[in-house]
Image (cartoon, rainbow, N blue to C red; front, side, top):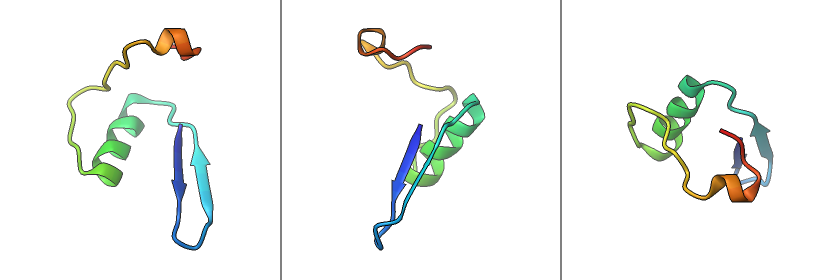
Length: 50
């Protein structure tokens, strides 16, 4: 899930359904180029699914 809060307070939130979308978000919003989606340690304890 990507949540963007703009300077004027407008909020845009959307589900990133595919790996390509996740990788594009890392690149576009954070300037991080990855070759695969990172694995979040402990995510299973927080209710996330992989």
